[in-house]
Image 1 (cartoon, rainbow, N blue to C red):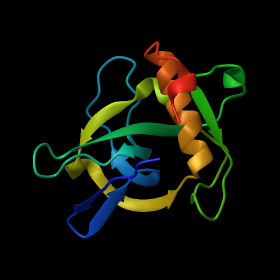
Image 2: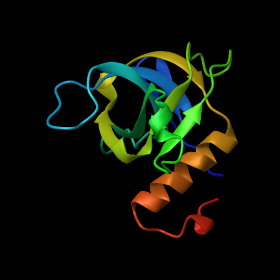
Image 3: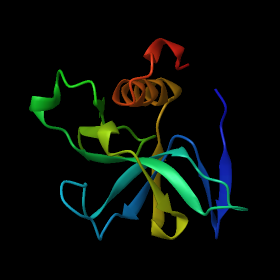
Length: 130
């Protein structure tokens, strides 16, 4: 797996890290407010100061069989306080200016589950996503 990192002020964004970000303002059904996100690609600071992320929200039992949500159990490594869901359907590029505190990071296996969910959303064969 390729990993990227971008230095952001006093922070370095790396694939798989979880940060607090402010996602407002939003429109319609976009996920709102200040919440944690997983960095999928930290961006390219020489060109666009954007990172591709997926937001994290509280787990809902209704998502058990929904392939667009990846469950995350709280651990000392990921820094989450409750069972959560990575909402892969809400993938987006956000400005580096939206990032605040780092919470933790997810495993390589968790990143793989996100990639497979995003592949399904984009109608890409998930078996080609390593």
